Length: 335
Image (cartoon, rainbow, N blue to C red; front, side, top):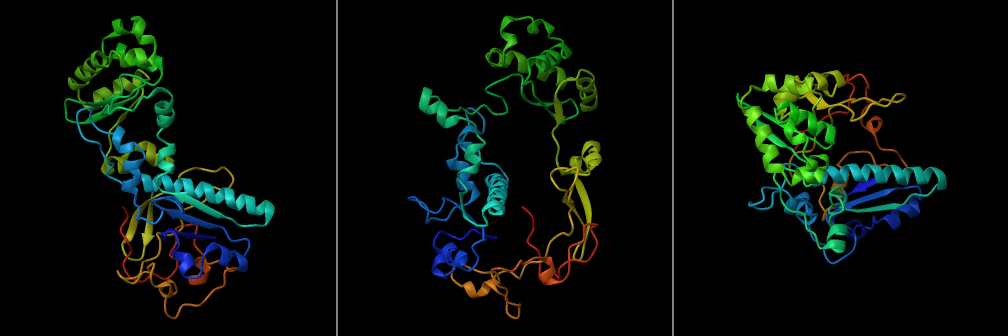
């Protein structure tokens, strides 16, 4: 298969469009990820995750009620699109198993993040309702927020289920609110969010984080500390799941990487190596110079070949060993 994210028409200008490639190899799956898709009024424009976060409604619905729209401080749209594309590729490969034919996947960066933001367009078209910024609060349940403890740490609380909300309010000494008729529904609690938030926030602010965490755990309430990377590295649950691996690395000695995102009982998979070094800055291929796609002196391969680690220096190791493809030049930092 081939994955590309040049602007529409670039591969075609090179004589490497999907139609040409699939004449040589009809089983080829071509995954095309662009900012705005292969057609439409903005198809030829440059597109990045920030634009998708803005156009999807994410930024409009994120932030404080009296503040500006907020963009995420990370590549959110890119990550969501990557997961969506991996699913699309699996569908295309499954179809190929049955039909023997490859196909082209056209994915616009602006679409996957739109799909995870809920029925905002349906609500607008049917009711004229637009999502409003609520900070850390929720439109559908309360209390739901981040709260600061006496020793300056932060905890997040969710009460998506009414029994959980009842446990929280009884824990903070406001069991009387649980008896109110409005407390029985998420929407009823949202209408009284200030009263609920004040009670929870005051109780937590009077205690250190360890005491709050112990009390919430004993009450079977839904909570989580607000973590940074140092907390993640030490968390016992992440350690139990083996979420973070310490991998040998030729350049850095050892580097921490995230493990496979799920655990399959039959074919669990493994992180085998930390990745190849990239060419020096400026040496990568561009839309205008397809010759750079094949470094000087590298062996040519046909469209029917599988290009993988064995083509560059041996198989990948599932045990995290050092038998990895030769690495040259600095590696691009993660984002």
